[in-house]
Image (cartoon, rainbow over all chains, first blue to last red; front, side, top):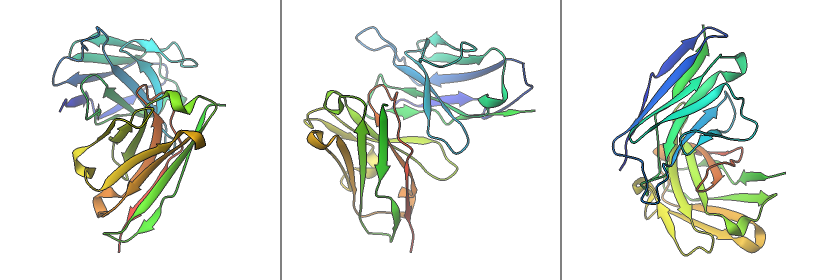
Length: 113
Length: 115
């Protein structure tokens, strides 16, 4: 099984400042079809998960452009250029390249200092 | 509006059974793989099962194999999860999601396994 490791576990951020979340996989997420199936999700308190980024760096419709995804192989990053109050929540990476099972990272809790 | 609505959760004793349902609207349900994902209280997300459009392929996380069964009725735009031999560790909010993209999620239904 592919293990997804996120860091940090908790990320206190000042409003307007940048934030960065790391996600590492135990093996390369490059699929035989050439795509890398790495998604990022946001889960606000009391809400269902919402996909933000798919295939490493593609932002979903309606997602603010302050969110960006990058990386390759086994190392991936989600960046928030300027954190806003509505960004508070838990962020998860998920790999869909080597399954079953599909696997999620443990989550990173973003909170305002 | 594209939407998934789960139902069927509740309190059940260890060893008991429960059937979850998920009704889809706003998209062509029969064209998509579908998935169940769960989240134990205060914990992260765990994929549970996937099912192909025509039902010909089903996959499960090891911890539920032999106990849970995913199924679907494309005529009713519905996805199901039959859960048998429930354990305390199955306590979670269960979400259905449109796979393999996981771009659409339901609001979740809570399953509590306790005596």
